[in-house]
Length: 228
Image (cartoon, rainbow, N blue to C red; front, side, top):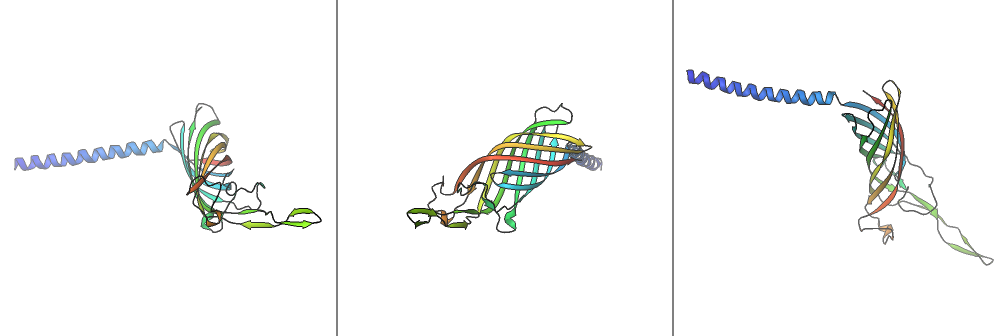
């Protein structure tokens, strides 16, 4: 009987020890996240992927580390930003409802955390999309008119859809404006990998690989956030 009670006591003691360890780890985990600041954001950005809106959720760890996850909405614009007959650069154009939506995630490092109401940072940003392009221009069909040559044929064509992976590094700043609200802006340079192919583009002289191309560009972003 004594041995039975001793065994029961040691078993319960082991269970309580495991339970107390789990509870300690849980409360430590909870306290860590309770001291991390959270925020919701809304921003407008223009980049190699053209214009988009991003609704995001951000969490700050410590004084100078922030991670963010967001849902991107592609804004279609029929007007071409240039007349250089680019195939991919600034030519993304959603042709279905699902193609309007993408994912954004990023990381920011605040290199001057002791400043008040002004928080500069360096950032990495990744935007993912799946969409077609819209290409508009003028073909080189010529007609002879009293000895002159006239380019006349206009065209609009779509390629894809492709997978777009845009990686951006740059610098930004947050400015407190009222209570828990703040404004932010980011500017950076990016490289966009466009994965996929289209039979209408074969052979494509701009195709770096058989499965994708790479475009270099920029990102300019400004928005508003609320901490909680």
